[in-house]
Amino acid sequence: MKVLLIGSGGREHALAWKIAASPLLSWLYCAPGNPGMAKIAENIDLNAADHAAVVAFCRKNYIDLVMIGPEAPLVNGLADTLRNARIRVVGPGASAAQLEGSKGFTKDLCARFAIPTAVYGRFNNIAEAKAYIHAQGAPIVVKADGLAAGKGVVVAMTVKEALVAVDACFDGMFGPAGSEVVVEEFLQGEEASFFCLCDGTTAIPFGTAQDHKRVGEGDSGLNTGGMGAYSPAFVMTPDMVERTMREVIEPTMKAMAEIGTPFNGILFAGLIITADGPKLVEYNVRFGDPECQVLMMRLQDDLLPLLIAAADGKLAGYEPAWSDDVSLTVVLVAKGYPEAPEKGSVIEGIEEAAALPNVLVLHAGTALQDGKLIANGGRVLNVIARDKTIKETQRKAYAAIGKIRWPDGFWRSDIGWRAATRES
Ligand code: AMP
Ligand code: GLY
Image (cartoon, rainbow, N blue to C red; front, side, top):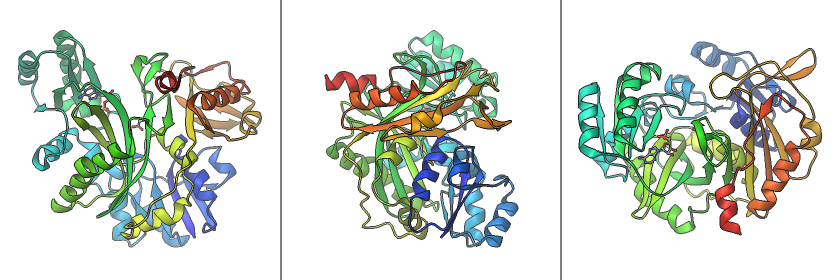
């Protein structure tokens, strides 16, 4: 079976690692991939935005399955184009991808189909947004509509902060994503990322994780794409998973089918587990990065048959097996991240780190220059470990990082701290 994987981050390296382990696989292409993926697959120069080129590549190379990693090609309708060309693909079409592409779309869907989420208002002018904030008071949350790479959200502890955030949104601080703003109730509770694999009708639970979005120790500083994660998320007990499926995921699947945009692909629910139960904070229509890394580290079954079943609408009855171990990933980023990551510094010692048992080093923003591995992005490397407890897994991951020589990189030294506190 020949597979084309779209993307180049840690998420895609994790998927490539798992797909490459499948006995069903005959060849794996990655577009564009990264230097780590090049060791287990063939990286190709194919622009995912050029849909005709992707279709032509798939036809010429007899691709059996396309897996799309990031959100941008999904929002741009690559999955629609492939489906129309009768090429097997995992991922939602552009209309269904609005679950991630437009916060307003998702909030309206929640309201219409009674899916539990924060109470909200949706505004396209400053005065009304500000009046709503004055009426509701703080804490309150201000979100730019549309894709802002996870950076368009301000959790405002005071009314003043919220008003500043509204101005920033309409000033274009988040690009065109800020032409509309969602203002919503602040939810109190623990956060969890919940994943489902979906085939248009059936959704099956596909793991839980907890991300660390802030750049600094103890969850301080600017929001990032994610500085580390672990799986499972301990708040997601079997009961809570069952409740989330019943109250959040299944109504969403029904709603999407009812409005004519059945959801196929990875549905990633950002949840806050409140005293009243799970509430939806946001949907993403793809795996999280770095969350995907910790999920793949714990998935015991072959990923490929699951992806094929999802693409073919035949997921009912699948119950993937997961390791009882904990997995944890630490993201190594370039100095200056998230605002202005410095490129070009040399990284050494990856092989020694990856040689440790139950440790995996996944690439993201790396490049090869004159035979040396260099930093070429914000999030550069990911070090993943698996063990019985959070503390042992932390020790293992940080011991592996200790083997990597990269003076121009930094990382959080406390990934998993909340869960570790709970263990002691
Ligand atoms: P989002 O991009 O919507 O996931 O939001 C980014 C982060 O902001 C979330 O991971 C939460 O930590 C926080 N957040 C978003 N919405 C809320 C809310 N209604 N109440 C409390 N925190 C929130
Ligand atoms: N780590 C968060 C995300 O991928 O959206």
